[in-house]
Image (cartoon, rainbow over the protein chains, first blue to last red):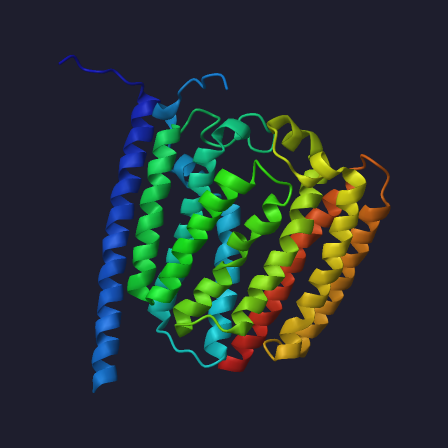
Length: 48
Length: 302
């Protein structure tokens, strides 16, 4: 398959988009984790 | 609409962020924060971490509906001077990607809000997104001059959603906050339409000045200003707001009425008075909600 050439500027923007997606996904995972911990600990202290 | 040359290879994260209408998002975050703090001041309890996650979810949900609106309105955005610089008319983000982005964020924000708070808030957020995208953008905006009157409900819901996130329900006081934003929306957007009259007409959007004429629009702006200023005092009457709120609402309400009167008396085609009212209307809403926030924070922590 022939390589597709993209300009340095387009490559830079693509890399920035990829980093933003990675950051966004990581942030979402971390937030869901933290929310879960907070909710469960709230339920435990509510039960006891 | 002529094909827009694609420059999507050069789109960066900030162009995707621009799809979310950041200025609208910041107003949503602020009004939602006030709703949440008011709920807590009224006796609701929510962990600060869960409150922050809920506010984030509400903000992202608002941004998602902005992206979906930009997807749907790409054709008219390309024609209006006010919206020409948006990512889709500029060829930076393809329409389909904006739609996918908006749908993904809509789903994630509703799920996050359900996890962080409760199903009532999540349901209200889902309804808000649906109302803005389907009822307002796809139906009302292009079919009736009452578009922003009814569609304004979407922009008025965030404090109710946030109140529900903190308390599990949406009591009368939450709906007073809704009412203030709901009544604020018509004079705000009609003032904008008056000083950008050609823009909406070019795009074929039936805004009140194009349909009913300038004189009628000015009268309606003044009529709504009166009702808004009266409704703006309601929080003091119900006990939601205190004397600081009353003073702020009265002072800014007087300013709003004065500028609306100036619009009413301004000569045809004049842009200055509507532009001033539009700018002031943003301060008006901000001031009222800030006063409530300050009072509630004082009551909670001082």
